Length: 363
Image (spheres, rainbow, N blue to C red):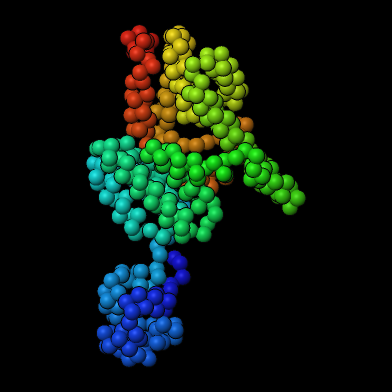
């Protein structure tokens, strides 16, 4: 709970209504001296007067006394998991109503508001109409704006800026996303060296274990980012088969070397799927079916687990502590039911029209 701020709030609300201390005292049935002591923090209003005072100022008692509800990291994770399940099982309107009620209740808990924006991004496609889906994304943008305007946590604000840009892209507002991301995404900026400098600082401070853990986490993330960049390369160069084939050859080798299909089947599935599209649009039906078979194996790994979670392996054996720092911990941002839905949508891609009736594709 944040520090209560009743004296300053009484002053601010009284001045907003353009009232003197005496006028407020007359309404509350107390002396001017009592109001003066409230505002100086010498005394506080009687407990029974708080609802009357809040009603006079047209605010809640929580707002009057300056109480801002906050959730712990574990509470945020539990709330997200429950809401994600609600979107998968309840009528969309019911899940939405519950989400908005929690957003109102914890409007000053900025890490939670950030995760609710993530929740909207991952579930807006369930809206009954396209307009309703866009409205949800715009609501998420509004939450990100609130975080950036009021939150003092640099990390949360940085995440909110990137998330807002992602929501803008989803809304088709490319210019807004470019304006936000272009300065910070410049690869020549010194900010790109912060990880290396942090490791050196850990070593200098004698915190060797922290240095090892961070390096491994960075190694893991760099690997995932490499695969993500390769997926973008394939989608941007699908008519340049020579470039795509070399990309697929190199990245497939890296994925096999790091056992990525087992380590992170989600990103591996995305790569195999994009490879299948490239092969299919270039008339390479056999290779497209091979890539789809690999895609299927990765999706099966996701569906066979009781709950999709981030994890390490024998090589990445120091990730648990780092993963635990994620806002959602090891929990995936979507329920398994969405994996099935995305699978159906993926296989309906028009690039596969030429092979849709083949037995291998049907299986």
